[in-house]
Image (tube, rainbow, N blue to C red; front, side, top):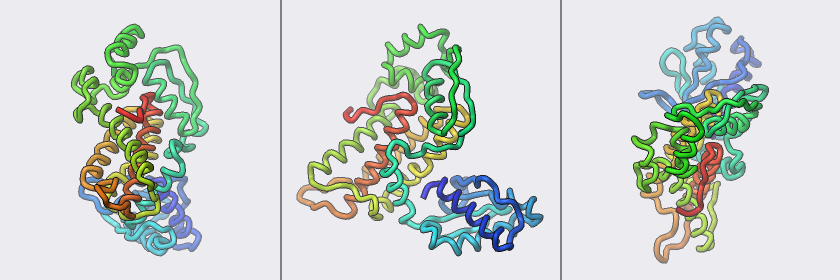
Length: 326
């Protein structure tokens, strides 16, 4: 279950509470669902009760308790929420069932590179200039349903570039992908030449290598005669850290588009790569030796395939290639 799906579930709970006349307040257009802050509980949290307290004329904590009861009643039917806790002045903290993370994998595999795209900016007109940063912003805005109008200005924020000649010099030095990554996330490495080194300290290499590794696992599994199973729970439970990063991806795309900040997406792809390697290093995706493919292998493979899909889609939005081999 993704934050977007959880947001819709929370809104359904608000609507039910209003329809049943246990809460008198207008149903908002959206409910913000995000990771709990340090010290928080559960998988996700929402402040919707605090937003409704004023219109409802009731304390936020009381509104939160009403919504908690409705959400718990809906939990089984919604197929994801197993616990709701009210914390602080009225935050709702949501804990998901283990198989709720499996739904993220199924969603990614069914939607492919369109996963995370939406209509959040439908009706918005965004003006952008030229250059790698502007191109990435344009793709992000398009992916959220916005309209892009091009201007004649050169747009390479965050980079120490005087003109397009300097941009071409950077491309000659780092290659097109390296130059683009440097311009989009200039603080990713201490020096531009660090992007040329194929090692773990290079986030560009780390992300692209994670993608290549995911694709290699799929090819090798095909050669062994088995495929990933997106309905499997074993591998997703083992790789819940990866599943959480994948679940957060749509929200990151929307935020990156709204704030014209492609670096947010670059950082998230790096987080996805790190989470995948932690999972990969401790849970073999492919059978070892004479071992036969198990349910765990199939579900781990589905998680790897979903990770590769998100990495490829994100890199494409940034204007960076995602090679099958490195």
